[in-house]
Image (cartoon, rainbow, N blue to C red; front, side):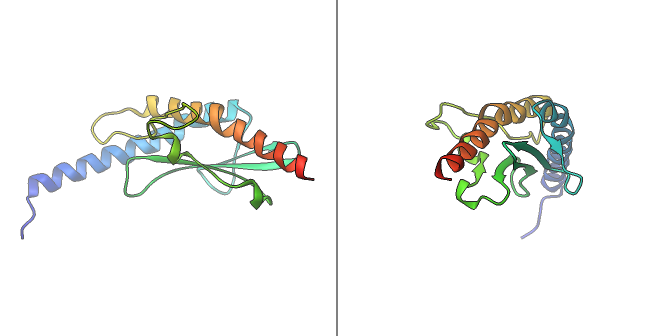
Length: 142
């Protein structure tokens, strides 16, 4: 079975475009995420931290290796009972919250500005309220 050189070149170009768009998004979101009070980690490029009610909250933003999608995760350091926020469930239609975000980078055109806007909106509308709710639940249990 031989590989079509034209198809291979087209696939490689699409992957290169996807990776360039993902890098642009990760650069573009920094100002928006920091405007929400997060600080970029000094140890990890896609990690942001914020202190809420004396609790360290961690936001992770990364590009999935086999998909054009970005994944946003959230956790509270030292509080495994709080759970773990993952953006995947908010990228599908019909999420109970009513929110739906497009966190995909394009393989064919530059959509980095739109994707970065969606990431910052997710942080503002989903991640920050999730951190506050999880910390509030922890205080009630204490």
